[in-house]
Image 1 (cartoon, rainbow, N blue to C red):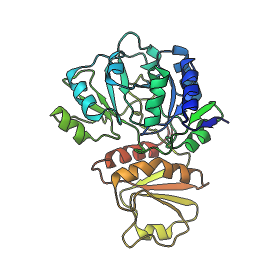
Image 2: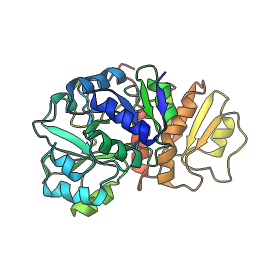
Image 3: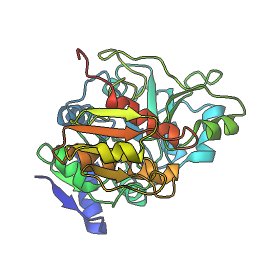
Image 4: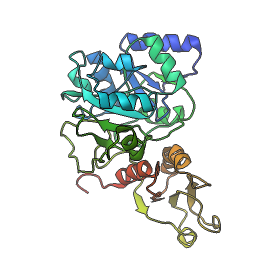
Length: 333
């Protein structure tokens, strides 16, 4: 099993050396845990794909400590600079035209690169100590539920990697929002996440559409997280616009439920397993707990999971995006 390291100065220096030498380290960010490697080292990037069993058509997000570091990897335009000023460091990834130094393996062979400046203090310290831009897709087997604590990483990848840096539970809990600004006159949100579409549109001064076209597996992608099926538990998952107390009372002991908030009148007595994302119906709190709730129920030996969709406002759009992809049928089913 992988060794879990606490973020002491000594451990961070040790892990920074491992990364500088081309090794892999699972790292905390404010969104989800990532599997990090030197993004400019082709063999290190290849090791990420092998460990996750990730197709080479799904590009990596590169993490940097600053705008200046991003400018060494991509061509920064005025629109992207506005978003960087507003949301970096934070849960926003920008897709920009790449510079020649970025290897093709990190971009699925395409002309653009996805870049983010994370806000997690432990990850920022590691980036500074390492001195390299770090590719860091989610630290889980490809297509499975994203990890939001070190224990999730250990359960999913502990037999495939050697090092996990424990930075505590993720404060955002869903992946970053991805905005394609490679053509700055036609901005597009490729994935909803920790920064809302309304916030992005407000900063850019124009409505920014959300990409909602189906993406085929096996085709090189502009950014990660676009496949119809993703973030998926091994237990079948069914979505509901609303889950009532009566439905919970009828449920069997082999069923599990993810509720956005408690039902009116409170939770009834039931044999089913229930995870409530937010007692106060807060979309941000619900997003923070989403993947942890799915991990908990998926490991409980149940035969069927049910999840309640969130109101679309704010972080609710990201919650629903993850749930809809998690519940999508496997290809051929």
